[in-house]
Image 1 (cartoon, rainbow, N blue to C red):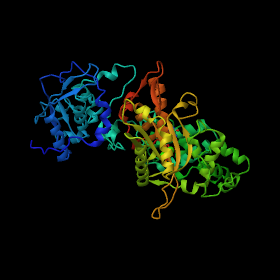
Image 2: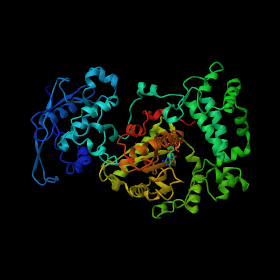
Image 3: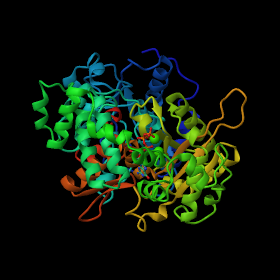
Image 4: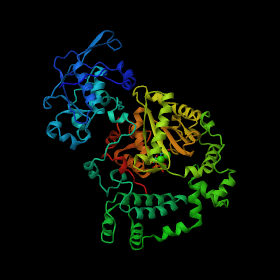
Length: 576
Ligand code: 8DG
Ligand code: CA
Ligand code: CA
């Protein structure tokens, strides 16, 4: 194969990501492909979907790599010479490892017979780059190219470091697979995988829940009743409606009088909800929902809880004081609409003031003052622009971070109420130290650059044990107000941006938790607890009986560890 040789075989980005690892890899003896072995490791590079320049880069990596590397920092002492013997092959059957940019089975099958594919380790180009960099064939687990072939890739991987994690009581992470270095894992929905989910399963994390379902009008109507229970503090009843809604969200057919009886097969649809559905089919309305919509108390309380910091309990208290409208709330809190000079940046200095009454009141005042802006939804293009800006500023504070935009955006919502960005550091070994305290530093930087005007809430790692019961998780996070600095060509509108920091070991649990939806996350916890004896939240997964911790290395791993089929983010819309 006549490949053009590039000037350099790797990018400067790669240098920074892996420079630490180069000096800390274990020496792995006993590998069939390792140091000093004569037999070369045969590499087949599948050209499809790989740019010609990348192709020559990869080929050069293989062809050049019978190099000797003196690594004076290894445990065995200075001067140990390592050799990795790679050889290109054009015969897929002979290959020990297949490198490809293809991710989907169907696509791969156009080039390689599936039966052969099942006998090989099929990995992403990053496996090759990283193996060459580290001087040894790395574990394939993080570089699996086609997820249907994950087990096979592990089984046939010519790696030498695979067992580090399994021999430990703690699931040790290692460098991630290629796709996870990107801002957003943008895998398409795998139809076979989606079909394996079941619409009548008891847990929403086993059901496929699209953003908009065939019975969305009905869902919206039932959601009014759910909201009424929420604002009145009737949590049990609210949860029943949430469950009914989530079951309907996953029901794939339009409900009609003809198939109404099929709904009896579905969980959580009791007599009351079924009769409401019947009424909706006949009239297009549910009387109880309509009554709430017309109820002044419902209207007031619903409006109050749209303000950040006002939950149902506070809303009812304010209502009992005689307040009815947001304008009255403004006067009560002495707020001037559109103007907020509340000093919440001081939260950055305070040790643990995030939940004091004064801090909550400040955030209510900000929420009220800026409510006309904050109630406007954010188009996904702007979500991405905010994310880019945040990450650019973060790079000035700490190099080597990566992130995923979570929340509704990731579930496919075209318009979001806020932006949720989950951030970690790419260095698995020292990443958690790098991430610690980063939240404050980033917010400080964003404030100095004029992007963040307020911090509504700030919390740190140390809350883990103390406030476990009151919080979703123990991650370091800042709930901020973001604004584009003065620019005549751009509308100056305030946006809510949540910045969540996770150590590399819990990055993917954080992404899953913060991707939601709320009901999906609730059922992940319930499933973990009831079916697996495990504990799940955004800050980690543990086994209950011995507190063993699990550190999933990819998002798919989160599902795997919990014994679940993977659910694509756009099928996690288990709320209205
Ligand atoms: P949108 O209203 O913002 O458009 O939709 P969303 O993105 O689904 O709502 P969200 O209120 O931004 O919440 C995103 C997910 O994060 C949601 O599934 C629930 C979860 N979540 C919070 N707060 C917290 C929290 O403090 N910790 C954790 N772990 N998750 C949270 O809303
Ligand atoms: Ca959100
Ligand atoms: Ca949010």
